[in-house]
Length: 102
Image 1: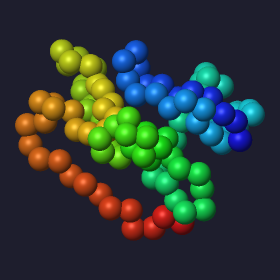
Image 2 (image 1 turned 90 degrees about the horizontal axis):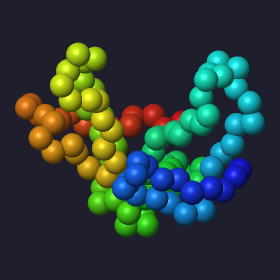
Image 3 (image 1 turned 180 degrees about the vertical axis):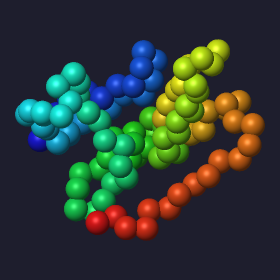
Image 4 (image 1 turned 90 degrees about the vertical axis):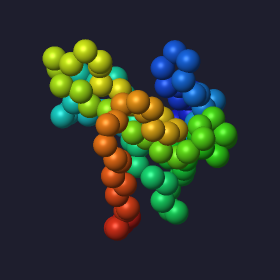
């Protein structure tokens, strides 16, 4: 385990002194300098970064949404932490419940 600040973007929410599980080496992704899991919190693990942001009242909802655009689109793909990306959807949203957390 290690402790560090977790910040999202220039003006995004931050958690100070957040506990992370640490990988000391990888072989399949040598081009990365970090991986952050977005899984929900489970009872036998420390809180996820999204749950911790919500508990600290840094985000309004414990939700992460992705808006994926094609590479030729005029708007870049984006990830929104703490809610839905307003105006990025012309249809409805689909929510999937976790049916097996173990």
